[in-house]
Image (cartoon, rainbow, N blue to C red; front, side, top):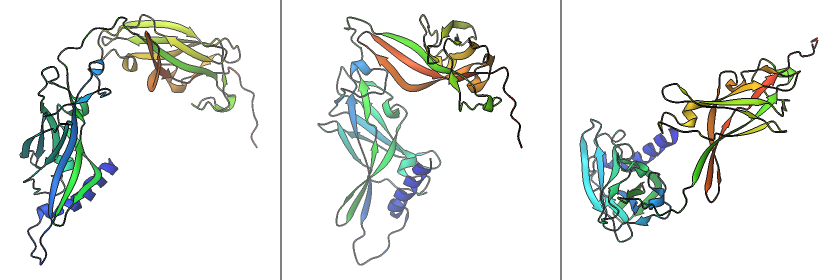
Amino acid sequence: MASTQLLILISSLMLFQLTLPTITSAEPEKKIDVVVEGMVYCQHCEHSGSWSLSEAKPIPAANISVICKNYKDQVSYYKVFETDGNGYFYAQLEGFTMSQYLVEHPLQSCHVKPVSSPLKDCNLLTNINYGLYGSPLRFEGKKLYGSNYEAVIYAAGPLAFRNKTVPSNKTTEKKTEVVVEGIVYCQSCEHTGKWSLSGATPIPSAKVSVICKDHKDRVSFYKVFVTNPNGYFYAELDGFKMGNPLLDHPLQGCQVKLVSSPVENCNLLTNVNYGLYGAPLRYENKRLVGQTYEAVIYAAGPLAFRPAHCPFTAHN
């Protein structure tokens, strides 16, 4: 947030002349223009529904619009621009002015939207980089100078259109599994009553449960898993299904709880990382990918049991 405000302030100072009356000078006044640049692509079928532009192709003669609003939320600038032969647009905002140089700054008030594509097989709008609702501008320190001209250049997008239909020519559908992983420890006596796992040791053959509930608060998945000799569990949620792709997502619907420890002197439950009531899942961008298999791996915990009895230590 702070970096965005700093960018707005810096580029506001460069554009401040737009709000000031002409000052008489012996030299010609330098003209400062606002420019927005970017690319428009046709998204590859394999990535439809995502924001990926891998293997995407530029679209020549695509139309985009630049819309700016003043501090009263009134449209103060609107114009349609066309991409060149490489799918690139260079939009000079001729006539753009700011009556309030801070709140009407281009970084705050202007957005870019895709309008139309000349390709019959790639003319559906996508929301990549918020193209549907208005892609925000970025200042990347780019300017053009002339003897009596200066252009402050902002970037937007890239934006994209997509195909009307996604071909289903795959011979084998890739199976996607949900996996939850974590470690179960025996907490050190020095840290009982805390969430610290300093000095903790892993517990082999400890049991944890994975519980998932749907958006109606009904249990949709339950299974107990056992840790390996290193205290690590790798829970494949075979049969897990989402009735609602948003509300029943594992990050929202699934939790991990402690069940039991085989260690007699370390089998009391703790609430470290909410192991008593249900540790939430985290997505740490970890996946396993094979030719016909993909596992999306979520993390939980670490979780811990604690000793039933700890030696008394006298303090001076």
